[in-house]
Image (cartoon, rainbow, N blue to C red; front, top):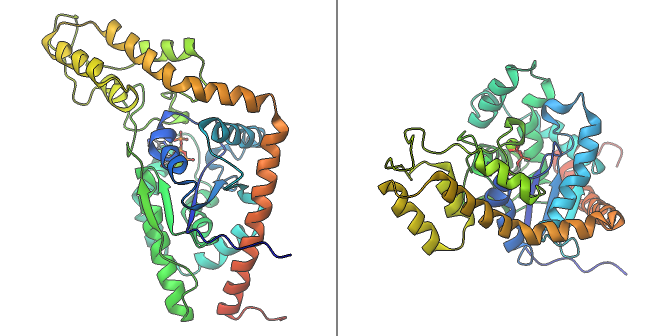
Length: 338
Ligand code: ATP
Ligand code: MG
């Protein structure tokens, strides 16, 4: 009996398996995924073809695939109603990337601001691999493969979604059929969460992240070491709340608004010390992370459930990809052998 097709619109989104997930991933992306996972048919992708500068450390990539899936289950993504997939388990992604890359001029990637910034960062440590330069094209293929309508991501990903829309339009125009819908981006509640060091983006490679799997003590230590207002030397100096990462995190993660407002009022007057502000932040973060930790340990003790979710999702995504590729080959008339 053929499976009933899912009538829901589709989401495709993902992360790279280069380490565990952090608070930036949560507010930038995961929160929307959790909220929309029933309304949309979701394809959550682990982008192991896009290993960035970890191509010399595949063990890390391999371990991170499991870590990412564990984090997803821990935050409450449900593999029953959605699909957890490993990108390389659907090699059609590589094929579609190759075809689509022919219709994108080099200049379009060279102008992509996210790619530019990431390459500048990478060049400080590494030469830039050819595959890195082309990773946005692979994201285009990831999104177009299940014909996704919506792509919930952090703000840094917007140029890649714009590229996807452009490629979809070009493909449909060139082959005179509506194969691909133009996907819409959806940015999270906090478009770009700052790092604990005050850097513009919390990032696992910058040593400025609080991870979803961090224990209570680690969270407290990281919060105590957080960058605050550099102009404030004593607790009696009036402080700045605007642009202060400690208060940005309070706003993002502390549900007790009265407490946050009281701390802010006293901070600008020089009537509260950093220790109190930070201790309360650590408590709020730990309360937020507690249920995530609990679910994480449940699945950590049941690794077979994690592997099963990856297995089922990847296999379903492959079926979907094969159907799309059949349409692509038909539109391009590259089905030479029938
Ligand atoms: P890292 O920089 O920590 O390696 P990343 O950006 O490379 O993380 P990706 O796998 O590229 O991780 O991103 C996964 C999703 O999380 C993307 O939608 C990205 O926009 C979002 N994201 C990552 N970091 C942040 C952040 N600090 N604030 C908001 N969203 C973020
Ligand atoms: Mg990224």
